[in-house]
Length: 281
Image (cartoon, rainbow, N blue to C red; front, side, top):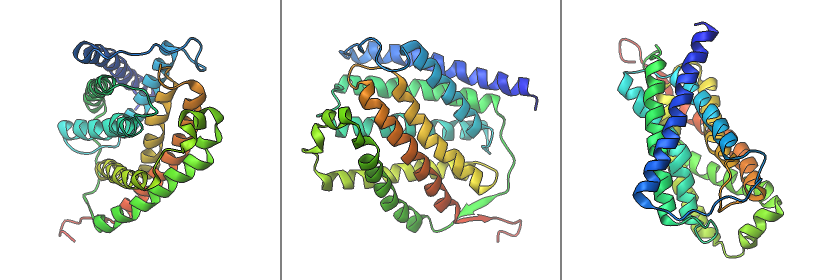
């Protein structure tokens, strides 16, 4: 495939992400009428327009990378793309926003608006990505030992989460102040909540590696970058409830921990991969 065709497909996905973002945001505003605090001027290295273009470009690259590896029918590929991306970008962001709602001053109408906006964006971009990137061929596979593998992934995620929080995020003075030094965060419920989130991460990782083709290491690397960049780049966008001095430490935290965790989780799941021969063995 020529570089021009690859660029054209990426551009089509980029347009879908950008259009979906605008339409989804307008729909969310019209339905839920959230009262949103405008971001302060010059909050971060990029303004809203620049950051949204960056987010759309990164999303288009990741969507194209995943879509070019997916096997199956058009609708199956579109469904997998939507499920993986919506889980990473929206579900796993908003569940924490709700959990830490005493600190993240985002109203429930704002949460609902974000959920609808992400749904429209990710559904449209998944359909376009599945359409422009045709299904890949690959050997039939089955996965074994999923239950114990997911059980192994859960504590690994908790370790990554708390280690990155302590060694990266909480190194920022502004972030510590934002969360009141963590003095009122009960650790036991938080651990249980992160175990629950690890199950969601495992489902997203399994959906991706199961439908992708190619060497196991490359699938795991794609999952790692997807877990990392889908979440981290959104933090470039200025908002009225979390300043850049806080967001930049969350960006570093998520960028590092999700990359490593995604790669490890996908590798564990791929460890149970078996090639199904014509005899079914």
